Length: 158
Image 1: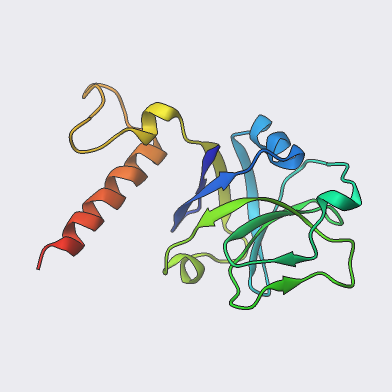
Image 2 (image 1 turned 45 degrees about the horizontal axis):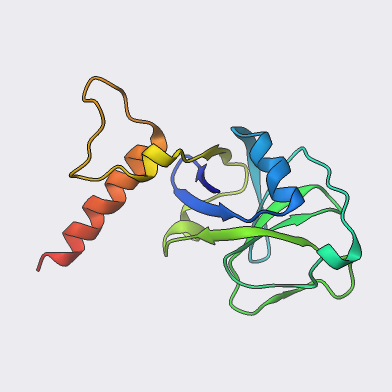
C-alpha cells in the first residue's frame, strides 16, 4: 500500500510491504509524529509494538528501504550510500520502500512534524486528463501528484 509522508517542506511516497509491522502501521493511519534524524536515516516514533521472530529481522538495510526498529519502536527510512549494518544489534524489520527525491534530505529537519496518510486508489488515478469534481477540495496527496506531473512536464520542455 502506498502512503504519503507529509512534512512541512517535503512530501514523499512510501510503498509498504505486506509484513506484520507494515500492516500495524497501515491500521493506524493517519499517523502523526515528529521526525528525528540519525546517521543516514530519518526516524519517527510509530507508537506500535510488533512481536518479531529472528527470521523476520534483517541485519542489513539498503538505501531507500523503510524499516521498523523493534528496540526503540521507530520507523526509519535509510538514505545512505553504503548499506546500514545492524550486526551488533537484534536487527530490524524491512517494511517498505521510499521514493525520496534529490531534495528530500536537505528539506527535512529534526523536530519536523510528519503525517503518514494512505493514498486512496482514486487519488493515484488523478492526472491532467482525469480531474476530480471541480467543486471538491483536493487532498494533499492529490496535490502532490499534480505538482509532480507539472514538474515533469516542465523538465521536458526545452
